[in-house]
Image (tube, rainbow, N blue to C red):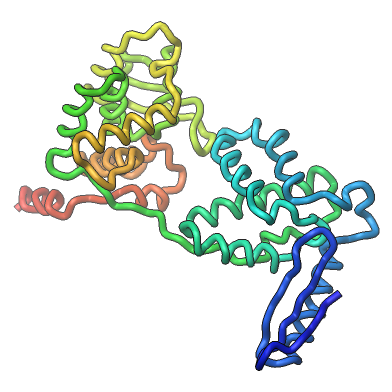
Length: 329
C-alpha cells in the first residue's frame, strides 16, 4: 500500500487508502520512512476492521456528521453552534474520507491545517464536535471503529479567559446609546445582565411564571450546566422587570442573534471596543464580590458549582480593595 521514493536528500512516503486522499510524509532517513509506513498501514488496518464493516464500509465522515446532525443535535441545547461547525466540516475535503481508513494522522493534519487559518479555540471546538460524533458512532450506532481517532491526538491549547471590565462611564454610554436603538429590549437586557450576572441565553428565557417580584427572586430552570437555580434580585433588576409589559410568556421574545446584532450596532454607535456581551457577566460577578458577598453567595447567583471556575470570572479592582483596607484603619 505504501510507496517510498527518494526526493533529493529526503525520503517520501505516500499511502493511498481506498476512500480518502493520499497520506504523505517526508523523512531525512529511509529507516524512519520504512518504520512510519509500517505503523501507518497498521493503524489503517486496525481502525478499519474490514471484516465487520458490511454495509457501512463506504461510509464517510460527511455521512456520519449528517446523521449526527439529524439525530443528535436536536436533543442538545447547543445544537445551533454545533450545526454551524458541522456545516464547516462538510465543506472541507475531510468530509469525503472513508471512516474505515481514518487514522489519527488524518485528524492531526486537519488540525494543523486549520490552525493556520483560525484560532486555536475554534479548532478545539471543531475537534470536540467531531470526537463526540465518533463516540456516538462507536457506542450507540454500532460502527465497527476500534478507537476514536480524534481522542488519539492532542487538542490545541488555548486561553480564552478575559479580565475585561466596564471602565469609567462605559455603562452610562451603553445605556444612553440604547435611546437611539430601534428595539425596546436592549436597555433592560443590559441592565439585567449587570445586575444579575445571567448569561444571554438565560436572560432570553426568562418566563413570567418564574418571576416573583414580591419575593425578589427569579427561578432559572434552563441553565448551561443543566442545574436549575433561583437567584435574588436587586432593586434595579426588580424595577426593570416590573416595567416590562409584554403579552408573551417570555419577557424577551427575541432570538440570541437579534441581541448579538443589536449589541454590535450599539458598541459601534457609542465607540466602545473589545467588549463582549459576556463581559457583563464578568462585571456583575466582580461587583458581587466587591459588595462583600461570600463565595457561596455569589455561586448561588452565578450558578457555578465549582468554586474554582467562579474565580475565572472574578476580577477585583485593586484600588477598590485598597479603599476598603484604608477604611479599616
